Image (cartoon, rainbow, N blue to C red):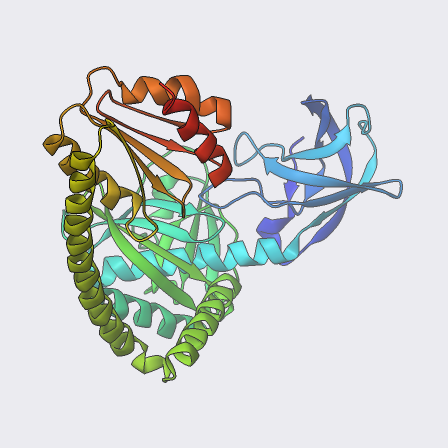
Length: 408
């Protein structure tokens, strides 16, 4: 006896009563097969249904449904402890309808977009995935990438087909050869029964493809299809999109973000790109000016340090700056030690509690100094003999580290 698959007769059924026909265990939990089921088992690119199973008033989660062939038992993985279910138990099964319907919308949308790519551009679908945040398909155009105009055309074409409310028909054929009475878009020979899903007129469909998934009965239930982006993947066009409620939720969220950005720029949403471009140009000019100022500061600070070193009898020099960044200080430090032989230079950035050690003194190995001492003061870091970096949680710890290494 195999499970009667209710979704094949009525894709809108969400509950059913059934008998437990077999019980397995997985990771200490019961996995049950039933006489009939509304649960769609994972396959054909469509995720498994999830939902609940009720036994004697106790409710358990169904986390996944699977099968071993298209005419076999449907197995329901539950969160019920091993030994909860027994053969002959009467149970009530219920799918998470919102999850199922969204996947029905997404799966039919994928069919229609793939069919559109075939009709408009002779693109062949070589891959399909329904993810949590998007659906993706890989369209092979023999190395050619779709343009933005072509993607816009495909999106518009699909949505126009969705909105005219085309009928969706699923037919079962005993053999692959028999299924060829329909103009299937992609012929994949195989043994056993074949189900063919057609969108539109059976003799001249908008799309026709072999598929064992669950779909709405008409295209309008897809609602809408939104293409998010297209990128190259192994020479093919990987198109990211979504349908129905998922697409609506994302587009609404993005529209709210755009509205908030427009408010920030005191402009309308359509003027945001030009405002952002103008701001980017201003920022580029500011970065160039800051870079010039940093070079001016570094040159003057380097000159000051070298003059003070020359006037001092010590080979240790401590420098602190809250104007220059750590990387700018490091570049300046290299210039200093290259002009001052036998110097041990300690550079401190209070803003990030970072200490730089640079040395032209062969007896001062910066990397070893950090490795041997930084952790004693809660710091971390490392480096080479001529330079090293140590980061601390606060300035007090950094100053204690500096006090320790300057004793040597």
